[in-house]
Amino acid sequence: MFLNKKGITSVELLVCFIIISTIVVSMYNLILNYRNREQIEEINNEVISFSNNLQETIQSDLIMGHLVSVSNISNDGYSATFTFDNPNSYTTTLTIKPNEGIISYSKNGDTIDYEIPGIADLMLSPDSNIEYISASNGYLKITIILTHPNFEDETYSFMINCPVNYVY
Image 1: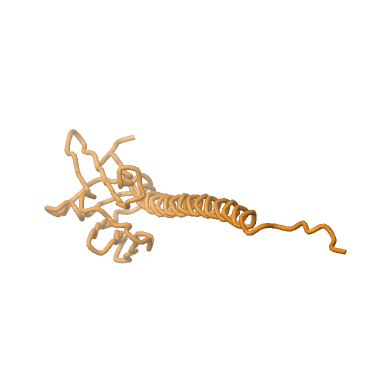
Image 2: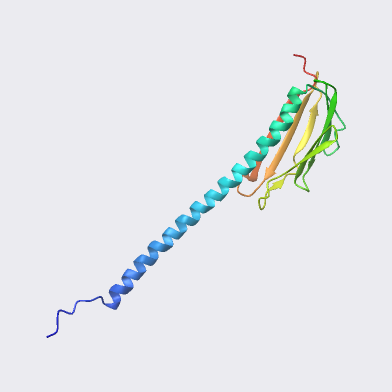
């Protein structure tokens, strides 16, 4: 009368549950690692975009405006005034504010504040500076350093270089 009693024992059910749980946990770790790599890449992209925007603005002014002199360099190297002669004589001021995470660039009274991207733990390094090397006509070197734990060596730096009073 009784049909064949085939079924799953509790041991077999427990083994299946353990195997499925192991697969789910390993997939969770894989997805978590992928998400961390994606966040690091997103941080890098934002910082690169910020640096490209800042470099484009300042570098084009330095080259196209024909930088003729650098003055008022602060003792800490965080600010300087630049004088240009193309097409008309004008001045700009660059100020690096590490404590505020802002780089200010003033042109004829109009100031543009470039705030570093709002990423947790991203900081403008106090090692950033403006240097004027006065060999022959001179050379301007602006170094901007950003720090973040996810960067290789925990820093990302870029430099803007320009000859001063270059005769072409």
